[in-house]
Length: 227
Image (cartoon, rainbow, N blue to C red; front, side):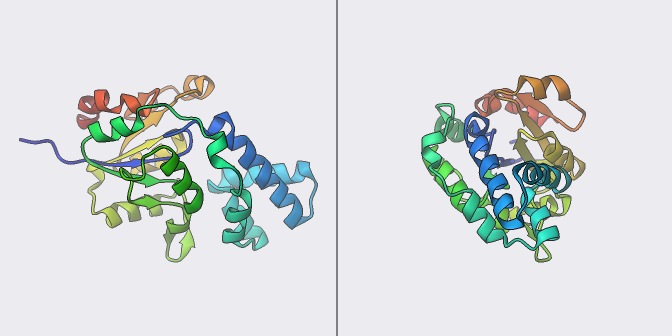
């Protein structure tokens, strides 16, 4: 009998491309500058708020919305307005990977739509990822709920009409994988250029597979289907 069809939910940054190479540095700086301007605080306090909200809520934006009434669309537009293609680094052969990988492929990223669309197009994956869930579409009862929100991850299963056991979250974030695994997702941890994170986390119980590159997915598919 054929194996059940899987639906792969792919993260974007540090999963499909190496955002840590340059893009994250630019994003962090622009977010800090945004907080400085709009909250009238110095750089040290802006950095502290940015990191505190990211750890507490999974996204700096949520903390700024909840505690400072920041307009989310203005924040996303201002912080992601830079030359993305010039800073993009990624492995070759991602298109071939997506052609080889059976099942449905969906993008699930906490990044904004304009940024995600640019990156996906630059990676030549736009035809393979027609369905893209970005932070603007991660809403539950009208409220922003980005990863690792379990309510949002549950909503994604309903939207995609996908039973939990046939959903695969492919991510570089252990926290997001932990939330997904609690709902029944299969989980794949990608650790391309993060030896410190790999050493620290190893492979906890909520990680089904750990790979160094998404290009390893086709070879790991047999193991993935037995999880």
